[in-house]
Image 1 (spheres, rainbow, N blue to C red):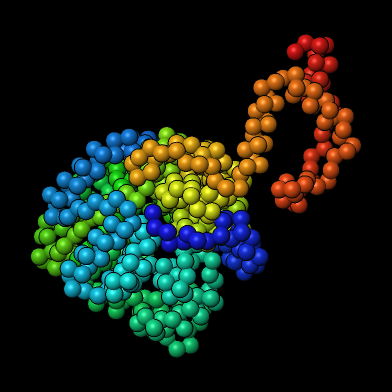
Image 2: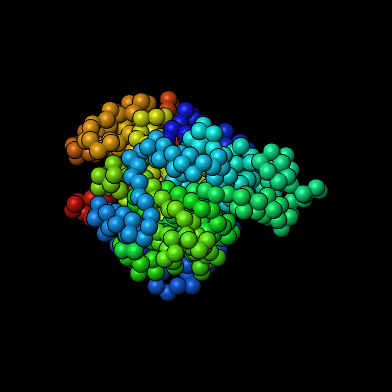
Amino acid sequence: MTATHLGMPAFPAAAREAVRDDVLRANLRRATHTIRDKRARAVTELADWDRLRAAGKAVKDHTLRHLDHYLLRLEAAVTAAGGTVHWAADATEANRIVTELVRATGEREVVKVKSMATQEIGLNEALEAAGIAAYETDLAELIVQLGHDRPSHILVPAIHRNRAEIRDVFRTEMGRWGRPAPDGLGDDPRELAEAARLHLREKFLRAKVAVSGANFMVAETGTMVVFESEGNGRMCLTLPETLISVVGIEKVVPTFRDLEIFLQTLPRSSTAERMNPYTTMWTGLGPSKGADGDGPAAFHLVLLDNGRTDTLADEVGRQALRCIRCSACLNVCPVYERAGGHAYGSVYPGPIGAILSPQLRGTGSGIDASLPYASTLCGACYEVCPVAIDIPEVLLHLRERVAQGGPVTREGIRVRIRPARGHTAERAAMRAARLLLERPGALRAGERLLSRARRLRPRRLPGPGSAWTDSRELPRPPREPFRDWWARERGGRA
């Protein structure tokens, strides 16, 4: 996976800076509460939501168990429909493939529809280094690009910006990228949307090459599916002469019928809509193969691994590959609401980013080793996930990996990693706990000693424990251990 945001401080340090930003916290609180309340109402409209959720999980699990089979079937279907399939093992290879495809057209600019995969591999930066300009056309991505910013939410990348900030970005930056913002632009959402529409329209009509991702790929037909809300995706997917789609290998589903599940669960979980405004599907070049000017004349599909098969090898962590990028888990997470997306140091913020990034990138850096701890383990993320990813379970699994080290798969090879730095005290505490719990007599004696010494309870823990007691009161030990109370109440019977 690309190291775009590596070098950042670990999550606690980045989050500490974020929580001091009152404007950021207010923007996040207002936006996340609005989206999650609407989602809750949209979900309760469906009496069979739990069955849809279970069906989505089952389809994803089945596909992941037979991923090699369905990817080869997809390749055959796309090729038969006139497309060309490329396989990219990592970000470097994917960026090289896309850059060469654009160069082969003779063009020096591309338009893009929002794609997490291309952000993951740092495609814009790779194209810029090759002298090719990439223009984001999703409104929120446009705001992020013009503001020289980074996305902070999967669905709403500019969620950390308010209307006044967006107006200022448009006023100062639009002219440097193309058509400038209208004179006297205000912060009314309709004015801002119209300014973006005018700015982007000239790029849509001029572009010869487009780059997209896809929400799903259907193996039996070779069909790509993009869900979007603004119509920019349809413009990108139909107007240019060459279309390049970069898609993670986990996005494949076996049959067209499987889409029925996700057509219901994804819009309700992401934008709280019964169906999204635009659903674009295309299969290769279509019957005319672009000869009638309807759709591109060349279609390339770049299948991206970039750590996904390594993640698939982990029996606990592989469930993260079920993710359909709805972002429902972000909107209910108390940690994300306060820290924002930038603190995660990845294009995948929030709870799903806390389990996905350390698996795709490994836990070798400070930021990735800290992400599994960016959670209160409240479980709200699991409750809203439309494909039932047990994020708390994976977080605990990754915490064990960070603290203890152990076997993992890297680039297809089974290796043993060392424990991350800074977890010596945690390991010592776990060993001490295990020794105590394996000796009931010692545990009983320790409990009695603690009860008798309850008046000596410190208000603040020393050392690393002080971070915990800075914001919480240390619980007072009970007057007698539970087992003693139980034995007394039951007349000495265990």
